[in-house]
Image (cartoon, rainbow, N blue to C red):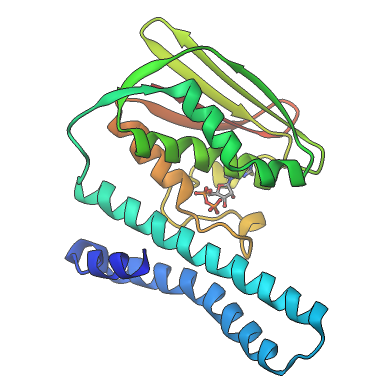
Length: 230
Ligand code: ADP
């Protein structure tokens, strides 16, 4: 992914200096961690400590490859490299699959999932839509407290469908609400965490390509709530 990304970045649009400095910053943190822990590993004899360092290196490598993947997707979306052909996409199945793919994350936090999904099929680009659900579910898990509940509903409203995901996390501070869909924007609580600030901007772009809209608000209980209309 990294090699493909470097090639793709040759496009002039992607080489705007603010973009390059955002990317460099995002790559620097995991790379510094990998370098540091690899050096420690070389001198460490204790097997438990060594295991811990290896674990950190594996996690940070995963973070780098997710970042490269997100940048590639963003680049494709910005260049308009989107398959013209739409296929029938079963949204409820995609959501179930997205949840299954990140089961290790929600079960580690012992989260309760409340699903109310009706059968919805739309014409769309399968892998791009899949990334929308994955990004939103990932965020909901990340911000949920241990043992919290995530509610996901998908319903039909006339010719449209409405997807909603609510969590019991801290919600989105008022000052962030207008910015979270911008590229590389991270709220205070997210700085230094494993996010890269691209998930929501990709989600919004994909939803718009499909003729829909996305909005964020907080629930009366204080958690975040994202609604997508397609
Ligand atoms: P990141 O990779 O940092 O999660 P996103 O683009 O997915 O990037 O999200 C941008 C910002 O929106 C996050 O840094 C966080 O401040 C806020 N955010 C997104 N989802 C949630 C949520 N479920 N609860 C609270 N804040 C959220």
